[in-house]
Length: 556
Image (cartoon, rainbow, N blue to C red; front, top):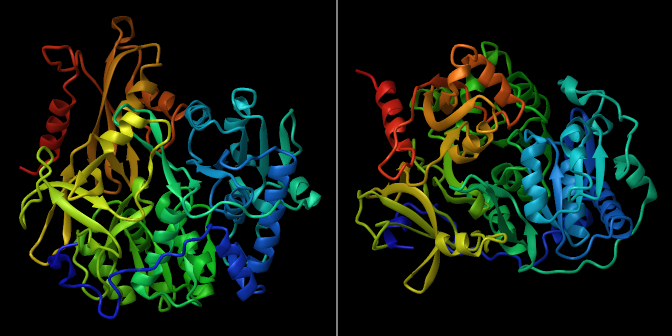
């Protein structure tokens, strides 16, 4: 890390942070010994203590080992919305020696099939509202599915109600290979001794590649621990400050900042399964929430609430996130309403959340921040890898303990993702940025082809692959379109078969797409064209269409 980056280092914070060289599950045991009766998770009025969390996660581990044959290093699919069961399953898998494969609960069966086949997962834990997407994969890689009803962990005395889609009582399960969550816990099986250490695989979240096929990012207990410890240290979070978990826990930011960091510190977390601006405000008021992480689109929606002035938000002392730059007007409104500055940061699935965060008290807007503890980040020429001067635009590369080991089963992609600079292994982020005279990093553009829709990464090639399954689509090219709310949204240029022209309309394509891919990937705009621009070698010139879209969105 250069001296420039240290110019505005948070006063009183060490530049190096010692990371516990332990298994992540040790945090459960430590918290349970220190705070056995303290609430870890509050879920629609019901609370789960650290002591009870340990007991149930051990029962899950025992069942996975003794009834599902879980062995050390086995990958286990976790497909749930934010809930106590997500956290319990996550740590139950780890206690049993497995590797957590968290997936977006918006994924459809065809998308889930790739995760199952690629990771080799034989076991899955899912919410019952998602079972229709998971059950078809039994016998196609999956052998056993443990099914949870979110309603079983919700309370009755709460200022907010459990979303109707999750309020259904536990269903009677039909079919082989299925077991109810409550039946698993009722067996109360004990797992074997905790095995494994900091350098064993811990969690494998998936991120999409330019080929369109999502790739598993191999994270160890050490890399997961690094940002779980660093995040709260950076903002000096008190142990008894209550957090609000509104970001999805399957995503590394929510996973680390809302769940794993809180468990490490022994802090209480209020969980919401779905984003709802009134529910969030009511939770802040009722449980005196002090800190929460939210992407900019959530903050925009939160502050646009015409009832916002009715809520007491005075307890909030910290709010931060990333995904997209925070608009000036929104940041100013947050400052006016809560007296706090939104703290922007930067990270990737490959880095288990943050590599950069703005320094407390010295935040810059639309800024990634500075590299955090133990992290070396640079802006380099994408071709020569030479470090660039202040203000020059190049690719952001990072080296640190939070960086993944590589992509699961993808040695070539792994080799392409890393470079050696000055004897250190750096991850190529694929993001173009610059450093200012104070050592702060700013995003400029994306080297890779990617759409950022409300913080979710959408890879056009993956969407195109799914759209080509439509019987009337000859060709499709997906680009990012400007969107006032989501930042970017997905637009598809479509060439129809001659016989379908005039018979198939844009709305039909949109509805067809919604049934086959996650909502955040689904095109929101379809434009029919007679042909796609192509190069001399026959490749679709997606950049031409993207530039056309950008030009159309530019004022004047």
